[in-house]
Image 1 (cartoon, protein in one colour):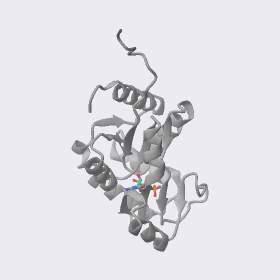
Image 2 (cartoon, protein in one colour; image 1 turned 90 degrees about the horizontal axis):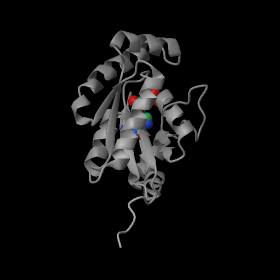
Image 3 (cartoon, rainbow, N blue to C red; image 1 turned 180 degrees about the horizontal axis):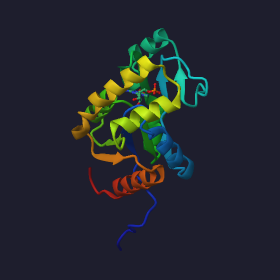
Image 4 (tube, protein in one colour; image 1 turned 90 degrees about the vertical axis):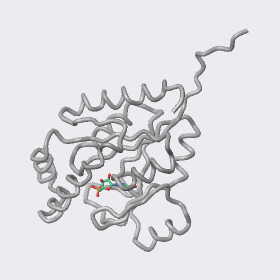
Amino acid sequence: MLSSFGGSMKKGFLMVVSGPSGVGKGTICDILLRDNEDIKYSISATSRNKRPMEEHGKNYFFISSDEFEKMIEEEKLLEYAKVHGNYYGTPKDFVLNSIDNGDVVILEIDVQGALQVKKNYPDAVLVFVLPPDFEELKRRLVERGTEDEETVNLRMNNAKKEVEFLNEYNYSIVNEYVDDSVEKMKAIIQAERLKIKK
Ligand code: 5GP
């Protein structure tokens, strides 16, 4: 007798989401997570200062540079990078356990981190979120009001450099309307879940 094809065994995978600061990738991911229990968000560790609205253990694990370097030495990070002068990295255990569990794990990380993940985990799905244009990006960054002018300019320059790596990614989404972008993310996840072999 044929075994059933309709089983509930889901395939977990890593989904890397990159894009310039202020592009809105955080908002897209928040909505995705709110609606889907089997999508998990990897909380990164960082040595940058906490912004007023952020919480330790929710947005990031805010740690010192020394503590970060200890995590590197002890191989507790799946990937890490120095972005805008601060360390950022992905704690390994949570990600690997969630994938084993059949969940999709979202890593909201920069291009350098994404390339490390792609090399070490070739099955990872890489999504790049683009702004409608760079002027709009600058407007959003300034409007957010969390960065001074120098930092906004640094982030704008990095944004232009990051876009050069677009070809390393599997998918791109132009974030014009958040709801549309969320639907596109869902479509990507569904297609990847249905893939036979990657
Ligand atoms: P922000 O300081 O605005 O929260 O993040 C700055 C940049 O660091 C963003 O491009 C973000 O994607 C990236 N980032 C956040 N967490 C990680 C991480 O764990 N690893 C890497 N490589 N980049 C990260």
